[in-house]
Structure formats: structure tokens, C-alpha cells
Image (cartoon, rainbow, N blue to C red):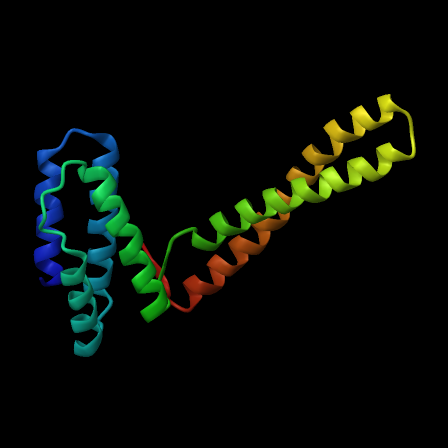
Length: 162
């Protein structure tokens, strides 16, 4: 199945549905496929992509289309990332924020416990409420900055799919 045929398939599916979640998945597929078409890829790269599209079995008619095509979209994005180092917009920002919030909260809980152990129970309660929230905010900010910088660097290298 060629890139053009796949784009037409998703445009057809997009016209047939009213489900907002399905529409978002189809639009994401269409956007990625159109960007790939406009990149001026060499024949070998195009054949690799088309081979992967065949493997994804996108012409099937599943009961839960949104779930099925969402999984296929994730697999396709992973293939593009692994084979061609192509990522979607905001990829590293999303990873950075998630990781920053998680690590920030963990460090906040640890600091809250450490500061609360040496005081009374009121101080422990305040520490356990304040430090994790503070850690999340700091972690989110640091993760956002690092992720955004990586996204900008990837964009300069023309590695970002619109």
C-alpha cells in the first residue's frame, strides 16, 4: 500500500465518522503521511515506509476503530523514530514534562520526609504537603525546558513531523 493510497484511506475514514477521537487519530495519520510525501525521501526510504504500512494491516475493518488505529499510529510513529529518527511535534517536551513531574514529586516526598522527621507531627504534615507540590513544579519546569530545547534542536535538524 503506497503512502498516497494510505492517505486516501484515512481521508475516506475521516469522512465516514463523527467520533472526535477517531477523527483525531485519522487526522494524525494523514498529517504524518502528507509530511512524509513532501520530504523528498529516496526510493529505498519510501519502500521501507510502504512495507511498514503493509505490515500494519490498515485495510482491516475492526470493531473498535479508534483503539485499533490508535495502536497502529503509535506503532507507525515508533517505526519512523527508530528507522529515520523522525519524531512528532512536542515529543521531547511531553517526555520531559512527564519525567520532570514524576522525579520532582519523588524528590519532594523524600525532602518532605527528611525535614519532617526532625520536627513534630505538624511540621511533618506541612512538609509532606508542601515539598511534593514544590518538587512537581520544579520538575515540571526543568523537564519542560530540557524537552523544549531538544525539540528545537530536532526541528533544526529537520527531524520533526508536522
